[in-house]
Image (cartoon, rainbow, N blue to C red):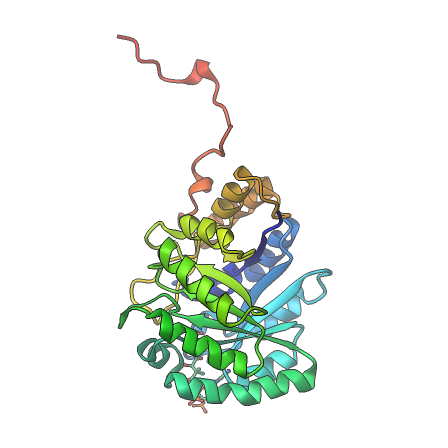
Length: 308
Ligand code: COA
Ligand code: ZN
């Protein structure tokens, strides 16, 4: 069975780096991920550069990667201004995002959930006029740093409003990494029952080490698309305590061990993950950057022996 992975490191990952990453390194990150087999990216965000200075160079990044073949580039678009910027670049899919809770909406989008939904209409209309695909992303879908666990009914209401607006694909963002397997099961099952044709994608953060359990649970209820970041970098700057996404290296290692196909080259991911750590200048959370993969062997001769 094939599992599709969207690489979000260039967007979710780099938005939370403390120092500004040069455009050339961002382009190289995308090119390296393409080399490892990635077919879909969140490449950047066309958001306010005051909100996210790290991604103020969105146009330049897109100019550097747009000639890539057989790759779909997504970018976050928060309003009409962002959509107009994205329309002038090689972005294929616009990711309209909003929050499931009022408090995270205020922090992340400077408006209420209702105003965010209203603000989407011109973006959707421009996407149609430009022939671009628009997908939706719900942040704080499972938990909110200000309001606690997100009630499933509340998430269903926001998702329903997006479906009414014409979205047929929604990313569910576990922004602060508090989703549990039972919550994933309940949420996905109820969403599928309410909207059988809706495509769902899980965007998981590994803040509490539950991301791979949530991936497995997602697969068991029919999810085949996940988002991850090389090295496990990432986090929403407007969600206190947020940390990185599930690492692409760890996700691919796990999925291959469980006999799922991803189309990604694990060894190349490790090479490129190490390059990323060197380029960013700090260790990255991906486990498989320090632990050898399942089945790897060490020479016995060089091992310490418990000689009594
Ligand atoms: N691109 C560039 N500049 C933008 C912009 C965009 N998409 N949207 C707004 N701006 C600029 C405006 O031009 C205005 O600039 P000015 O003061 O120089 O005239 C300023 O930002 C304020 O615009 P306003 O429409 O009042 O926006 P806001 O201050 O209410 O912020 C958002 C709303 C959504 C633009 C902002 O909160 C944002 O960018 N959030 C993104 C958060 C994010 O990416 N989080 C991580 C993902 S989970
Ligand atoms: Zn995220």
